[in-house]
Figure 1 (spheres, rainbow, N blue to C red):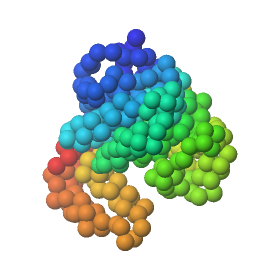
Figure 2: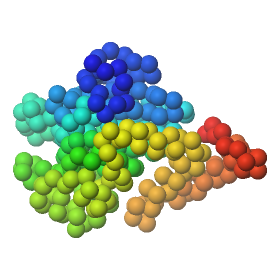
Figure 3: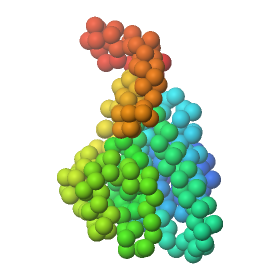
Length: 284
């Protein structure tokens, strides 16, 4: 059993670790690592298929990170070397999604998890190894950046299961890959390999599997070293730009920009530039 939660070959973990957050289930691990937060779907024996308790743990992790000003970026990944997330745990569907009432309850809990990910003001990076299927792809699409290993596989198999795919997930998919590719993914339910996923815009980078964690950490540390208020304002502005014009909160974007100019970090950035040294940003 590995004690190194951030490694792609993480095995099932039990018990608390330094910086850990109690999510209510050992199958959803959240921990702090300096300025980086980690959310780890920890069900490797089922290729990290997501159960109801795992969905319920996501908002808990997100709110803990949102309340921590030292967290500048969050990485989402899966335990083991087989999957990021292989989708919802279908073995639980008979108990949890067999009736309209049960399915509505399931939708509320999983929907709250996705809504929570959307509330994160800091950048969210998906570190993807192996299968990224169905609900797993939905989680990856909720992230700002996606970096995968060479053997990663992507698909939305709804059309092979006879279930309906909710609008918010389709909206995110269309926003990332466009309508034509989104239709191909949904209509065919086929697997896209890592290079094809990169070609259609599903992922930002494809790296050798053995270099995956190092590449994601390097990206996260580069982001974490930058001015947190500027990075948050940039994420906010990009997200508002993706909305219909009449739904954009440009006043909120302007307030975030003005907060940057009024911050100690702006003064530190100018001073560091003049002194030809690396700035030391503190997010205020």
